[in-house]
Length: 470
Image (cartoon, rainbow, N blue to C red; front, side, top):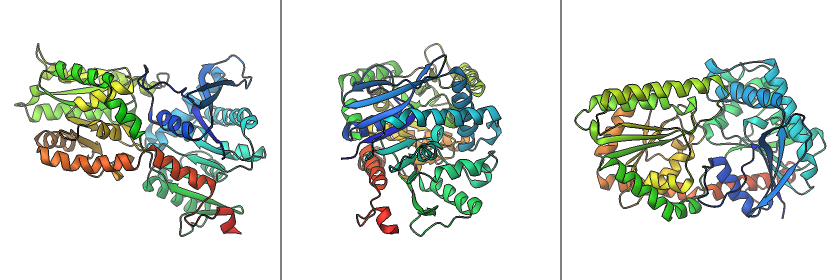
């Protein structure tokens, strides 16, 4: 059986269920994959070192082996804070107004990708499958090829992929996309992002897209396909039924004193539409004053990328909007927005989700958004809450029985909140049953198996891609 070598920007050391500190969707998904597919998770430790050495820190916890390297301060500034988060991230989320093009950023990005390639190379054995993740490491497959790696290598992009008319604003965009064509499999969250990529390859690179969506390039056939990621459904449901979840549920229910609860759980990021969400809730409070004192919004927003100026501005903006809305609608015994800048363990979050009558998931642009799926999985099927979901989240293509909204329209979101609060129990159950079926059936195991099968090079008839080309 081939091992699985996972490579990502950061490595999350596996934690026992319910352990302190929240893990993101990527961490949960990859830990689940690696437990069932022996292998190694390689990436940056998150730590600085004065001089890069390439030293590997190896750990093994719960059948998952991790290997991490430390980076120099200049690497972190140019590769991570720079090119990854001030160039690619805003561009891939259609925020060209926030995208910064700096030659030093690009040089740092290439340098760190080369350091990743040098460091992980000794860990790769001939039969291993190599699975690279996300926008931080787009050229890594090409660099490994240059070092003689013949293994099957796949890339999965967790973010959106922008339209060609936006991507061409990126200096050296042809070189970046060309390096991606050294992968055997390129995976996207949705058919929309896949379509944008194929359109670029066809329009800007002059390549032909085969009827099955594959690309023939330099004597190889590249599989480009949508692989919508899911949650670890079984693990999450078990956590939602735990004592920790019940305690969190009871505590939150008691604190709102019979009021209806809306919940949002997002990293503090401009792509999540938190400012627009707060404005929409403020509009709802103003439009329906008779019920305004009976509804509370809990927004959990752990800080992220605090070294980037635009993220500092987001926090200041949200704090200002929270104060304005609370000042206009609060009284001595009631505050309509509870804005919390910290993360919570997953089992506590499951309890918070179940205690909430509405899940408010309204990103302006999102690759998938696993919070939407977690909210659905946490609900009591007899008395489920209602999911309000942005039409621009990747999850909207699967969770069509949510209330889909345009997050840019505060009126649209405000009206959806009112519709959700008024929704009869029968309709809530019907919607939830369909949503739950999608979350349960297309979970992280389904996602992993689909991608790994493609990475093995197997087609529907069981033949490998190499055999088919021959």
